[in-house]
Image (cartoon, rainbow, N blue to C red; front, side, top):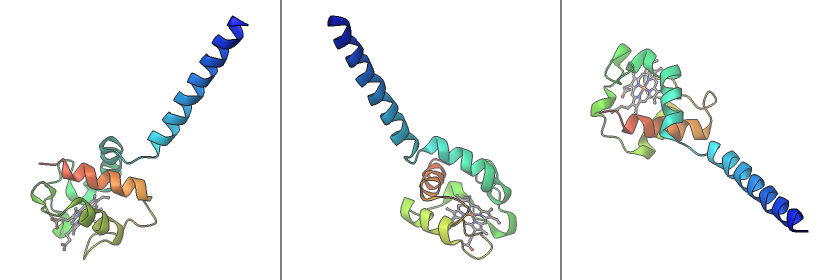
Amino acid sequence: MYKLIISFILLAFVIACASKESSSSGAPSVAEGEQVFKKYCILCHGADGKLGINGAKDLTVCKLTQEEREAQVKKGKNAMTPFEGILNETQIKSVASYTMTLK
Ligand code: HEC
């Protein structure tokens, strides 16, 4: 009986960990944003955000808020590609927060 209780506790613990993991991988993060940035943004903005290809702005001096960056990544602007349809909502939030860290 004692062993049964222990295995129930273990099982509950494993389930709790597994569900926590799946929810956290769906949340935006700077780490995910860095991956997205390296794949989609360095073409114009450069690895450090300072490169200005085709009029791309230096992201290290960018004054836009998190929300404004998310909107610009989604909709694009002038020579910048709209990423709506290429990136999902979480990736857009993540990459916007990553650009906030570029100084
Ligand atoms: C095809 C080239 C190109 C790519 C790829 C690109 N951008 Fe841009 N980006 C631009 C250009 C051009 C501007 C300036 C737009 C304007 O204001 O005329 C810009 C501006 C921005 C700005 C606003 C800067 C400011 O201070 O106004 C942000 C933020 C930004 N880009 C983020 C990103 C992110 C994040 C990605 C990757 C998901 C990305 N960009 C991919 C060309 C690009």
